[in-house]
Amino acid sequence: MTKIPAHIAIIMDGNGRWAKEKGKMRYEGHLAGVKKVRDIAIHASDMGVRYLTLYAFSTENWKRPQEEVDYIMSLPKIFFASYLKELMDNDIKVTMLGKMEKIPKVASEIFKEAIAKTKDNKGMVLSFAVNYGSHDEIVTACKEYAQDVKNGRSNDLTVDEFSRYLYTRDMPDVDLMIRTSHELRLSNFLLWQIAYSELIFLDRYWPDMQDSDLDDCINEYNMRQRRFGGLDEG
Ligand code: FPP
Image (tube, rainbow, N blue to C red; front, side, top):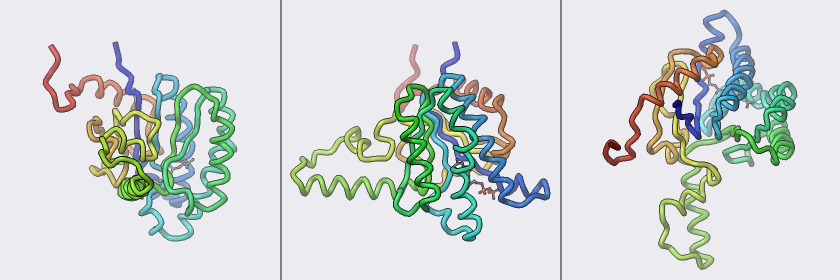
C-alpha cells in the first residue's frame, strides 16, 4: 500500500528560467507558477497529503529588483481571487509561515482574509512561506524562549518544546522535501523541520511540474527506507 507523506514541502524554483526559455518576461514565469500552486495543492489534497508547505518568498528574496518583489507580492491577490473557492470546496485550510511585519499590506491583508475564511476547514493545511528563512525563524524562536525564561519559564528546554517556538508549531516535521529545477540546495527552508526528511530534486521548472511528478515523488518516497538514525525494521 502506498504511504502518503503527511507533510510535503516544496521549493518552487525555476519560474524565471521557465520564462526565459520561452522568450517570456520573468513575471510571466511567476504567473504560471501561481496556476501550478493551484494544481499541485489540489492534487496533493486529493492524494491525502495532510500538510503542504510552499516556499513562496524567502528572507533573501528582498534582494531582487523592486519591480519583481512588487510583482511577487501581488501574486497572493491573483491566487486567492482565482482559487479560494476551489480551496474551500476541497476543505483546504490556508496558513502562513514567516515574519508578517515586513510583508506589504497588499499581500498580508489578502492572506489574513484567506486564513480567516478557511480556518474551520478540516482538510489539507496549505501553508505559504512568505518572508520566511530558517535562520530568522530559529533566532526569533530563541529570542522568544529567552524572554519566557526571563519571565520565569524553566530553562530545561527539550527538542519538542523548542519546536513549539517555530512557525510550524502545529505541524509534524516534513516527511518529503521537493525542489524543482534541479538546484541541489535547501536555500534556508525549514532546516530544523527537515532533519529526517526525504529529499527529491526534480529536473523540471516549477511551472512545468505535473501532477504525475508529485505521484512519482510519492512513489520514490515509498521506496526510501526511513530509519531516523535507527536500524532497518524486520
Ligand atoms: C523561484 O523561482 C520562485 C519564486 C521566488 C517565487 C515563487 C512564487 C510562486 C510560484 C507563486 C506563489 C504564489 C502565492 C499564492 C504566494 P525563480 O524566480 O528564482 O526562478 P529562477 O531561479 O529560474 O530565476
